[in-house]
Length: 70
Image (cartoon, rainbow, N blue to C red):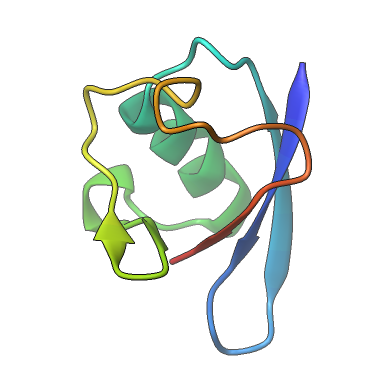
């Protein structure tokens, strides 16, 4: 189980617990349940890289304590 912090650039930070083998799409569903937004409207980025829904967190080298931007 890992914990990832998501920043929405408005000052709100959300911590989401998930598994490293979860896909980005699965992670978006967990995040959507916490922030109250539809998962298909969420775009996750780190720097200039936009994450695709079918690739796992482990493949993107997202580990415990990682920070992502909405």
